[in-house]
Image (tube, rainbow, N blue to C red; front, side, top):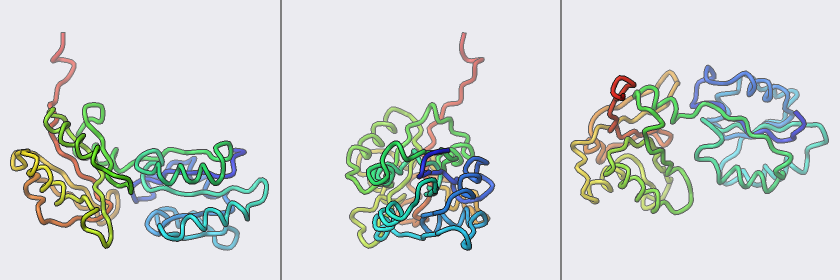
Amino acid sequence: MNDRLFLVGVGPGSHNYLTDIVKQIIIKSSYDIGYRYTSSTIRHLLDSKRQNIFEVTMVSQDQVYQQVYNQMKNGEYCTIPFTGDVNFSESEVVNRLLEIFGDVNVEIIPGISSIQVAASKAKIPLDQSTILTFHVTKDIEQEKNDLVNAIRSKKSVIMLPRPWSGNKEKQFMESDIAHFLRANDIETAKLKVWVFEFLTRENEKIFKGRVSDLENRSFDPLSVMIIDQVRRRSYMDFD
């Protein structure tokens, strides 16, 4: 491993979903930079006596990334853990880190995503579903259109809603999604839905009902929502 920066997926929340390669990289690293929730998953692997550990927020992260980049010596490793998988719903942060550290100095190690875990619990096949993330800062109008089109096409949809602290107009949580779909002439009372909160943790919660039940109902910012339109067909259904 010659790369200086490792972007690693650490799973939805439980350390039981950590892969061995990610554990090895975290232990070898001189620096660890992460959000509080994400870092809590790997805290048992960190050693404050020999590692430089930084807890960041959306406001402080860029300054810390640049500080660590300028501080690191040749041969040292830095790990940045991502909840779930690095390659899903994290491109805005990953692209910035590639800018700071340079592509050749960065290695991405995939993890088990909340999307995978939620799909498994609901028994929804990923290859027959539309997967969307609203958990971004960019405009989401195209994703909203994709959501409506997928439902009208009778596809299941697995998605990350959009929390937005302090600005309700920008958030797109489960209740907002339910209102939005009804406003677009979707019969939400007929759509089956799952909502997963605190996936893989001891306080995991699962809601199962109809999309119409979500109106004016609150869920955790890191929840996963599934609209279940799966049609189960096996190899016995085909010639």
